[in-house]
Each structure stands twice: as structure tokens, then as C-alpha cells.
Amino acid sequence: MNFLQQLINGIHVGSIYALIALGYTMVYGIVKLINFAHGDILMIGSYFALIAITVLGLPIWLVIIITMLVCAIIGVMIDQIAYKPLRDAPRISALITSLGMSLFLENLFAAIYKPRPRKFPSLIKGIREFDGLHIKNITLLTVGIAIICMILLEFIVNKTKTGKAMRAVSEDKPAARLMGINVNRIIAITFAIGTALGAIGGILYSSGIALQINPLMGVTPGLKAFIAAVLGGIGIIPGAMLGGFAIGLVESLTKAYISSAWADGVVYGILIIVLLFKPAGILGKNVKEKV
Image (cartoon, rainbow, N blue to C red):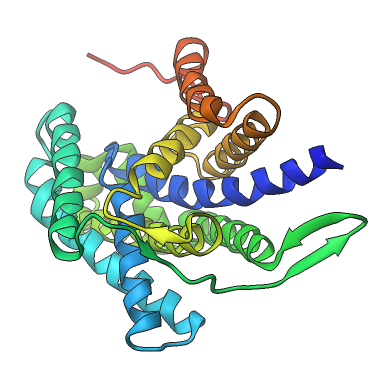
């Protein structure tokens, strides 16, 4: 019974990693950029949600919508200011810039809100019991939202005109430009979608797991979501979901049966193993790059 309970806990946290990993994989799939500032969007979304709840007194559904819109705008601004000038630069330049943007956001919010943690309210309360298993309502909501987001992303990418343009930009930017596709607009839309998903992940993480927020809160879940995206196959939407659930389960079982102190080490060890033996990820395919 304890094992099943740990599986449920792992699926809960894995759903949040999956939501954040979806944002990673969207941006990488289109721009081929590992946006390390993406984890800090989780932190920004949590702060805006806290303000909307405690100061404005808005209902949860409106809090989620507003936070998604705010983070989407911030994501587009980050792209336009930091990444757009580096579109044709070597990838290492954009990677270093993403690290710099991450540090900037963390220090900006530390200066505004101070480093001390702030309590985040539990938005969805209540527990359901099934044959001795305890399943929180926030767990059911989190898993449901993660699955719905994956389905919507798959639909957008594969069934819409914008998704077709995204796939074209991902394959060949110069050719996409020649076909009349506004590449910068498509990349901006991609950042907006990715950061909106990060905002949802931030609200659910703060409300269901952390129960407090601080300027550095996005670092660890952001890294684990990146590992989830790599594990599933970065750039592949179902792979992000698969990787998120896998990392969540591994973390939960490690805490339960080995030690909480080993949980992060095991997760990072998985990244090393994946990069050594299957760098394309579980669902990824090895693609040779021309030099």
C-alpha cells in the first residue's frame, strides 16, 4: 500500500515536471535553445499568482488565466530582448545568455521581494480515499491539467496552421522565411506558449508541494524538468510528459526507500546515464548534423 501511495506522490510531482518540461521542449524544438531561464518563469508565475490571490482576491480560475497571460508576455519580452539579437549567433552564445537571464530574474525578484520565503496558500483542498490510498484533489487537478496541456500542444503543433509554421521553422529557418513565414513571430508565439505552461507549473508546484515561494525556488524544479525533457527526448511533446512522470516517480521512490538526501543525486545521475547511452532520449532519434 505504501508503494502505491509513493507512486501517486510521484505522479503528482511528475506532472509538474512534465508541465515545465513541455515549455522546455517547445522552445528547444523550434529555436534549438535550452532556455535555462525557463525555471525562473515558475518563480515569477508563483509571485504574480500570490499577488492576485492575497491582494486582489481573485478566484483560482482567473488567477491561473491572468498569471499565464502575464508570464506569456514576459516570455515574449525575454525572447525579444535577450534571444532575438542572437538568432544567427553560435548556440553557445544563446545558452550563456539564458544563464545570465536566469541570474538576472532571480536577483531582480530578490531585490524586490527580499530572499525570505513567503507562504503560498493551498488553493485546492480536500483528500479522497480509495481502499486506504490518500489522493489529494490538487493531485487529480495537476495530473488532469498536465494531460490536457499535452493534448492541446499536440493538436496545435500537428493540426493548426501555426503549428505547421512551427514545424517548418524547426526544420529549416531560411527555407521557412522564403516560404513567407514570419520566423520571429512564430518563435515569439512559441515562447509565449512555453512560459504560459511554466506559469501553470509554478502555481501548482507552490500550491501543492512547496507551499512557500522565494526568488530561487525555480532552480531545482527547472533543472529536473530539463532532465525530464532530455530523458523523454527533448523537442518531443509526449517525451516531455513521459520524462516528467519518470523523474517524479524516481524521486518519490528514492525518498521513500533509500533516502531524501539521495533523491536529487539519483535524478541528476539519470541525466548522466541518458547522455552517455541514449543522448536523444527515450522517444528521440539520433540525427547526424552536417559540419
